[in-house]
Length: 249
Length: 78
Image (cartoon, rainbow over all chains, first blue to last red; front, side, top):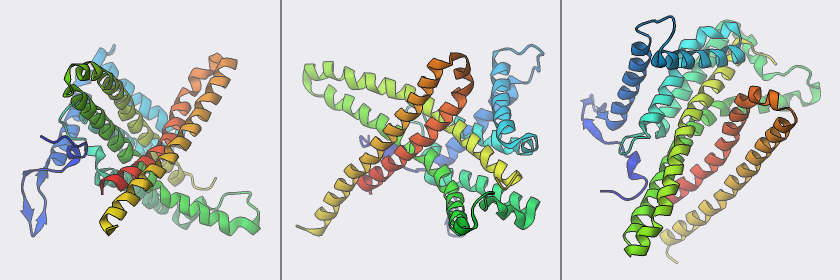
């Protein structure tokens, strides 16, 4: 049994696989990513199977999720942004379901690993850059030259714009990673307080109710953060894709 | 003092200083929500329409506070 808050993030091999000297093991992280795909696919496919004209609860939930992200993408990137809807929706569902899987006790939070959030952010930024250059050629670099800037400070503005563009994948990945990491560490720390107080005699058990209540409140907050971070990831992806579609301010 | 203990002590101090960032993020969040409430009380009908932007602004600002928490955690646990 581990009582420190970091143990929950350890990667453990479930099925060791080695290919050419490299470690391709099926780990607890892989298991939860597979479960994420299974759960989100099952939710979307099974809820909409009956295709009722008047949707029941599950079908409503699936349709509302679809419509919410479609509306967000349409607002941020315009109607031609909808070509990216499969990407944005998949990212949103993956992040949301992976975050929610992590809320169960003893389960592993896939999005609390920097490599996973970095891979997701990398997908977004590579899509933005490659699509931007494919569609606009070198005019894509107009993104870094805002209109109506006096020529004297233009070099500095361009440098700042380039730096802020390069900081996007970093902030996108670290935002999700740090939110999940901090939330889960806080939960485990407060849970540790319950155990520590509870082992301190009768008054300790009475006092242990306080960190228990705090843990319950934090769990509720964590559910909110899980959904919120998924939404923020989706809306930032939409905004960055808008930059690829319509460069130049 | 032996070097490992000095490094550990310095890391602990650094982790404490990193928490100032979270206080600043708190100020920013109070600013956002205060302005939203001020506007919402003047025009309650329009408030619900801007709720999405409120939550987006909250998440972006909160992220910076969490970045400083991340630095503190990195200092404490590595």
